[in-house]
Length: 276
Length: 324
Image 1 (cartoon, each protein chain N blue to C red):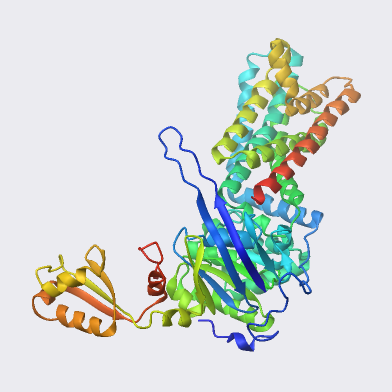
Image 2: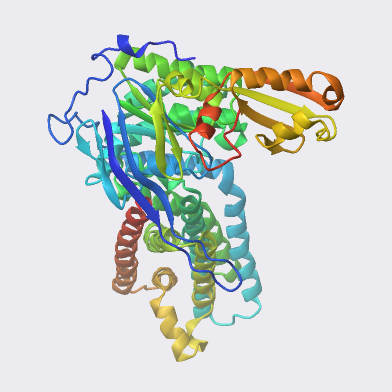
């Protein structure tokens, strides 16, 4: 079906090599994709996937957290505990989507050879990882807001400081999405990536929602090691009449720090997974 | 344009675990040497597991070879694998990175990640979708398309953001004839206008014979022949392929048929024989007359195809190549 004889092609006849092996002028390379434009392109493409595949899962994430709060309503008796439950349930939405679903996504992409698509494009690894992480963090916004507002009404907490979620969602989102992406890209098999994501989410659920005062020491330590805890605490502190903003800032700073480190690890893991 | 020297890649042995048998060490590419010239459609032909995809993954910088070199347009791809992405466009067998995007967004995003700015990416996207006849389904998600349409959409994404070399791994799998023609017309246009070179992986011999300028036949990681399709077929020009299909079973009580059996490759009721022309004539005379004819369901005589070349060259996989 090919109708063009090779001899009439522009640039000379067949068999004439334009560069001698090992020497001669190398051809000009195509442009490299720059960090921010390609990050924006990946982000936009990932957001559009939500319309096709993710909306049912976002409902599940929200209903799960609302359900937990309704269950805890009968158990919780003090205001402090109510604050932990509402803050914890809100951050569980972030953990479910950013950690669990992102780990699954990257695990499957890696196992199916889908990473080849990105690896044969001149795009910086950070654009792919950060674009996907940012998109998954964005998926959590509606669910987290609904959960937080519902929880405040259910437990009679003030709605005045809900704006802190504007900081909590991206920072906790960065930390958890970075962990999720790293798990997905490092796990040797996709089932393991799913398992790690599920375990991470279960940890965020158990250690984040239950009030810490009743936990044994070792569990508390585990709670302190989990990055989502700092998002929960930052949010929980803002329910008070006079929140200690310095401590809130420290908590959010921990989230940001973990976010930077985990996203850097995820970027390294992507580079490692893409070229074998 | 693209020179491959002594390319070797060995996959390590996998130890057996609790009941599961181990996998021995596999040499996926074994001292492969190739020269692809500018503007040609160069094919890699071989059965499943011959090492075609491993070779392509090494050409595209996705897989580091154990030894050997790949040079594309003067760039050393083994030392600088990241440069491959700026020289070539690759269409792999998997579409999972694009599956949940619309056709339009898949093409546009790929263009953006190939370094185009937003306006260029949209412009090239529209042009390529129009060229391939994908405009009517531009708004549909790849996942919702048929296999052939999805493949065509991935091919479209590979064309957005022009590259001097296209590496296509079985691009027309599952496509209908209209889509296939759109693919080869798009390839030819780029060849005529810009001198684009194509490296094509295929195990479809019909396609190989019609579109390729030259073809390398791979078997067990080695290049066992490399020539034009016509040149390869000349190597077995002295042979004719005879295929016999028996109604029930072969009439082995006919002595001439019993003799033919020794030279036949049997596959159920079908016998395939490669014979010199006069032998073929005698064989046909035997089976179309007398007792043998009563047992015969169908027979064909054919000049050799690339499949026959492959088998004549000693291709290990006796099942041959896909003919479709």
